[in-house]
Image: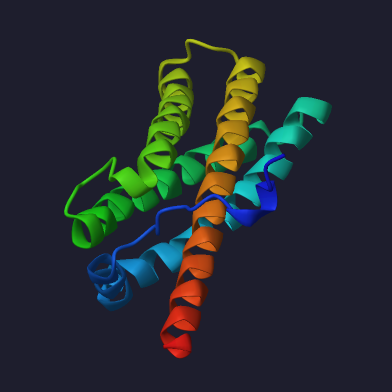
Amino acid sequence: MLNQAASPAVRAALYTPQERERRDASVWTLVQGLLAPLQFLVFLVSLVLVVRFLMTGQGEQAAALSVLVKTLTLYTIMVTGCIWEKVVFDRWLFAPAFYWEDMFSMLVLALHTAYVLAWFSGSLGSQQQMWLALAAYTAYVINAAQFIWKLRMARLDQAASLAAGAAT
């Protein structure tokens, strides 16, 4: 019988020491750190307005405007995130450490962009636009969870690195 607890799975560190140094030295890390909670706050306000409109039929303009503001914050964090990836990983997008998060971000962007196009063209009615916004928001929440998980992994990596350094 094999002892499964004897050899835990080894996971590659999220950052090399050089990438961690570039990450920590970059102003874009601070920018991302400020934009992420701002975008989440905009999302929460917009979510309330969209759900209110869908439930009561009231506040259509406020809900529509809030989705447009949410989309603008999304594009801002995506552009600055690409700059951050270029600084840290020397790739504008799809760095191996964040490949799947970036892939899912494309879906989030596509859904938000589809909302803007539907709003601008009037190709969908108000109710359908708001349901599209909710689909975009669902994808956004999943994507945000992916990035939070990566942040947690980075912190665990750093703690392990510090512990290994202290042990030597």
